[in-house]
Length: 429
Ligand code: NDP
Image (cartoon, rainbow, N blue to C red; front, side, top):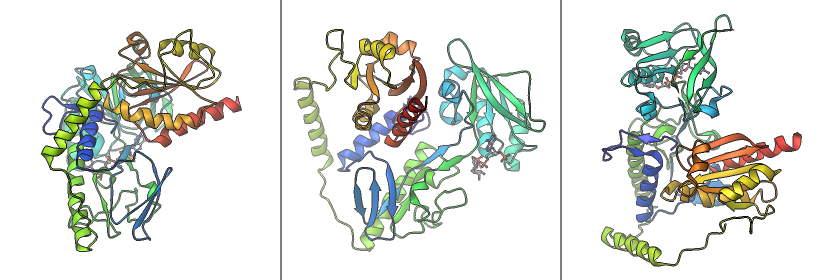
């Protein structure tokens, strides 16, 4: 989940961050005996029983599968999108719109469908004005949605308008948009001053790895049966959340859909005499075990990390992995390799998940990429100058220029792709 703040998940009256919510769900699943493998699935074979699931690291078999791979919000990919991502540009008004940075500011929403209209209306709660940027002559949204937008005095609709690029202020936050008239293809001379731009241009479901083995609609969303909303065209394969849900797309609706899929899966396994009951510890025992493990960990001597703190005495440029600001400065100025910097904080659960995963990926680039980890609690001035607004955050530098920023925890393949691109560019240069 890349969402920063989740304000509408029941049970969290103060709101909760997306990573924290995920971490809590993860711990809950572990407490009930789930085994987690954080890997990219590269292919599935639904023609075999049990089904076969391949990741880059292993092949697994399963009598039933729940697909919950979600959907990725489409982006415009304007030239400075990465620069202002999470610094004014977002793909989710519902999740990010309440940020104080947008309060009483002018904001823009891109798109002319139901999502964009809904986002524009939603943002009027916080913004002084919302500009809806529609690339065509008219909005594609349903009449009811269109009317809500057109009836609102706080939304200004700009037809035949698309975004060419964005510009920021001295603090690195979005300040204005460069627009184009799509009818004449000419740039609009006056930039649109906005503090935020939200994409409402649709979603791409993460179903490519299914290789057409399941029924999907023309956009790739899984088709689920009407009766339970989780069964797919392959018996024993179920779907949960945004990978089939185009409409609601909230953490709470996805969680509810996950629960439906789990119950349907259990019923399927039971009916087919495939259910193997695993005796779980009762909740009391499980809680005691977790508490005992925590106490043991707190009392145990601190484990030596594989990357010792680096200073002038022990800095070795031939090593791949480093820690701390001394190493960062040395590598930034002296390393001929792409430099990967991971910003972490001691209380950050997702950082703990990302570290071993990133380390495995970095092992594949042992001689070609340098890595340094910065604990933002130990090196706050470094974090501030790097504009870190949350952890984990991975930044990639090449020739002293920041070429990529990856917020949160992503799939291994995403890190691999970015690292490999940098190496290809280096060798081509
Ligand atoms: P849609 O595909 O319906 O609309 C996408 C919009 O984005 C279109 O206006 C499209 O323009 C525009 N767009 C796409 N690419 C670009 C681009 N590169 N630059 C500028 N604009 C672009 O997606 P939605 O997410 O809005 O809706 C998906 C489904 O979910 C729909 O069936 C919708 O009805 C449903 N939904 C219903 C809601 C409700 O009823 N409350 C709320 C949200 C969604 P163009 O029209 O020119 O192609």
